[in-house]
Length: 163
Image (cartoon, rainbow, N blue to C red; front, side, top):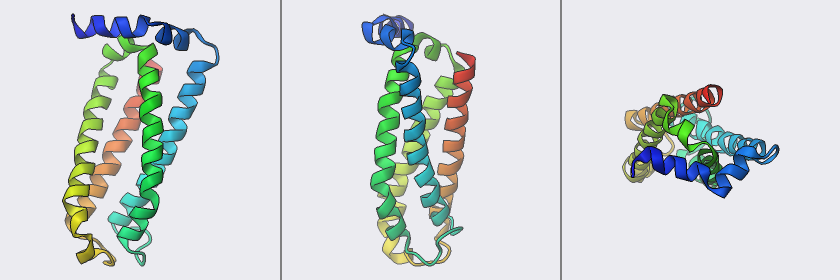
């Protein structure tokens, strides 16, 4: 079985067809997806700007990060679940979209950046937690995150106009 035939099968399931053909379900899922994106990436923006030493310089990085981290993950979880449903109803179009493929690659790179931050740079936060300007590694992770999410959102929005 090819990936394309798997995508066709996914799209043709009763769930995929129901979502695609419903007047209300697809727009509701898409709206929830954008709300999840707003929560997750909006809070990530705050975290990244603190990492870059742009905002909240007098607040410890760990304090800012730990307060918003649960909400970022809630938003991200909402995005993933609704994104799966959006893919489910248009899997073939997604498979044929360069923007979808680019978005997936960028999501993997963003995940690698987040894991590298969590398991590497952030482990030493006690050394630089109160610094007005965090170390270069933290600032690079913040910039990379912002750039990657801007590109992911751009690909997602472009997909919507090319399907």
